[in-house]
Length: 575
Image 1 (tube, rainbow, N blue to C red):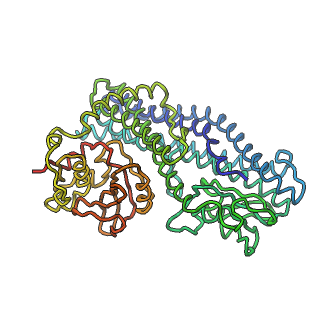
Image 2: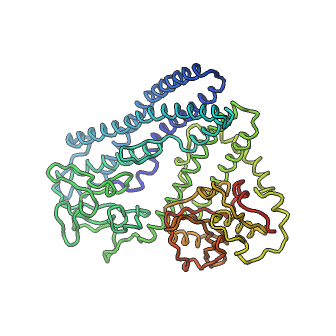
Image 3: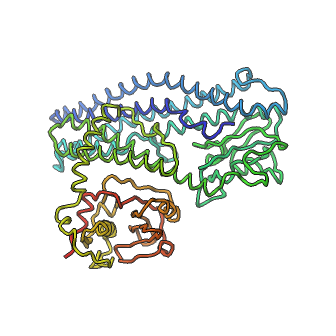
């Protein structure tokens, strides 16, 4: 059996290889787009596009061929080590049934290991082939979009290039699956390797189970196991079935059936395991394992009274915190990729002040993201995952440059903080505590602007929302603020619990869907009181008394956020 912590950091080296490929693709496409600006004439441009696609493909194939041998050696090492580690944990139980041969001396086990190795090679090969095709499509689509924007008179060439590149950097390389799901290349590789390590060790364990004639297995348990609030006792809720003894065929009163409970099946005649339901045991990204078991042994995951040692509520809270941590890490990587592209844009247009300003703002955003990530991990006793914020092309030189520009921007930001001078002149005026003055004409399209106005009033500025809503904020209300990333996947109750743990007073914005459309409100902590403030209607509720349904909630902290240009556009000074 492999412990859940075994998987941490094991795939770092391999993932870094693929991150290097992804970052090179991003920079190569940026370079080729910028170079296109020197061409003129439709025929020349179309011929040049075809040439660039060919050159881009050749370079990718060359890099992938170099990557393949390195990655295969690393995969061999990872799978072999996972098998040997799992066997060392299982050995004492197996020897209760019969004498056993170590994995590298057991021909049946070696056959299983080789089969799993080839399967993993095939999955990684599919990922790289998909990457080649997708990057070529991306390059052609970006070139065509730039040409369309310029030909239609919408933008200058430099402006069009920067805009499409910024969007591309924001999304990065993605892998599309036949099921319709989509993952970043890095996430796809991580999922492939973690799943392969787990399944290879499991298949070897199954061979030993067959040889020993074991009837039962013990499934591992860990804090922060996957939990589905909509189906807390279903297969997808791993915290429900972890840490228990299961019977491979049939069931006992104290040992449910393995397949029925976990979605994983073992054939006792062949020793082959099957992931019947990929949401369960040994499915995608699952870190749980199993081992042969003798019911005369004491289950290490339960106490003397047979109760789980892991508190399910604490485990669920840890899972929620880890999901927030993953979101922060993804946001940091995204900002680093955006900075790499901005670096290419600055090389092409060094005198463009708008590009320089965008770079500085991104550099400051990265600094704030890193700071908040560190604070979040420290406050919640989480280990910082440095490997998860790496971007291969973002080296010491890039970090030094970004840090310098972040300092320059912070000097400006601390002085002005995104607030226009007209707003600053209201500081010191008497602020009417009545929330209803924020939306004096009862507009029903300015909820995002109302949140901005409410926050500004908390900072002592006499600001109200404009009647007409800002389209960008209706679609993406977090863009009313600089350097914030929306967090998703938590319920209202979970968010309230997280805010209760905050030190001092604070305010968060919540955006959600309900049966009549979408809406934004403020979730405010003042002392020990948690309130929901609706600036659009002018109402304040105790958090537990706010009965509006909240679906697909996104939330972000606003009490220390800088208002953006779009946020300013949605508000005005009070008459």
